[in-house]
Image (tube, rainbow, N blue to C red):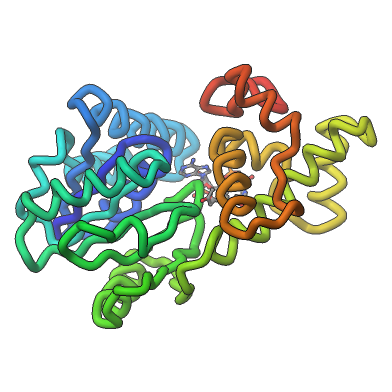
Length: 277
Ligand code: CAA
């Protein structure tokens, strides 16, 4: 099938890599200009080079997957069967993007959004065709889960089709209602926010907080390192949505999180967060 990925950042590139892993798929990785789209593909290639160096992948395998990815602006998606939008977490931008895709794409093309916290129902308003949430986790090529989110007007046929597509690329889909943070982020992101509070109170160093949670709660990585991986700006944005939608103070973003984001300390992507990269 032909899959258009809108947004070539960390998630968009990871999702593109995931779809391109399946023989028979062609992926169109798009961004607001060709350079950004191309950078997304370069990010995938540089991950492959590391795996080739570790002898976990051959040059030929890498070239095969990369040859299934074309880059450009969204107009190259006109013939796609599926769109997965992974643009910035901004409702107006997502709505405008889908409206223009509705004009561009063939009527049978399925529309999915990788939003991590916004309402799928709201994103679909005024678009002219139904939308389903297809929420991947970072790093998308590795993480098995996809939350498939039904908005108020998402037909079950669309949800079912995306569940099958998620399975076809080796993911485990779960059905989720359109609710702030869905399942994973509603539980996981407040945990990261709490770990930031523990750090701000001087209870332990960042490394010791992460070691404690890794070994004491059997997590694959500590919450502060995970916040750096996700992006502290994304963590903050999700806390703000949870607080706004629930009107519950328990979701208040920690002031240190707000301060770090305002200082441009966003984690791995800015080379500085709780750790330096
Ligand atoms: N892209 C592609 N592959 C990657 C990768 C990336 N960014 N990072 C790691 N990998 C691959 C590695 O190549 C390796 O694969 P092979 O074994 O085939 O070589 C495998 O993942 C394991 O990597 P490492 O050996 O380097 O390191 P690790 O065993 O410590 O695993 C990890 C790294 C997968 C990131 C692991 O620490 C982990 O699972 N962490 C938790 C991640 C998590 O919770 N993600 C969810 C965040 S929430 C979210 O994303 C939702 C949202 O909306 C914000």
